[in-house]
Image 1 (cartoon, rainbow, N blue to C red):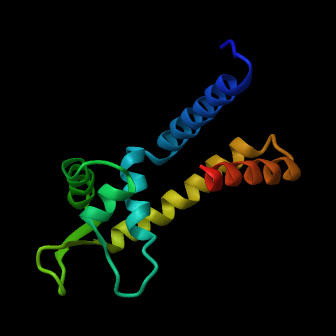
Image 2 (cartoon, one colour; image 1 turned 135 degrees about the vertical axis):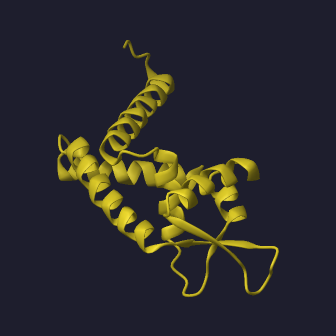
Length: 142
C-alpha cells in the first residue's frame, strides 16, 4: 500500500496496525473480539461489591443500549456472564462474570499477551517506551 506523507500516512499506519492486532487476536482467541472486549471490561471491575451495568457497557463502547444488550446476551448464552437485578435499584441490571467467564478471561489475557508480544517483538525496548510515550501524549492531549 502506498503511504502519503504527514498526518494521513500516520493515520493510515495506525489503522493498519489496529487491523493487524484485531485480526491476530481474533484468530488466537476463537471468539469475536467485541465479546472479548466486553468480557474484559466487565471483568476489570475493581471495586469490591461494585458491578458493571448494561448502561456502563453502552457508555464505555459508545454504543446504543440495544447493541450493548446484544453483546451481553451472547456472553450470557455462553455462560460467561450473568445478569442480576441490583439489590439497590431493581431497575438496574448488573453484570457478573461467572467462573467459566473468569477462566475464559484468563485464557484471553494469556493469548492476548502472546500475540502482542510477538507483534511488538521487532521493536527494541527504547522504541516501545517512546511509542508508549507518544501514544499517552496523544490520548492526554486529545
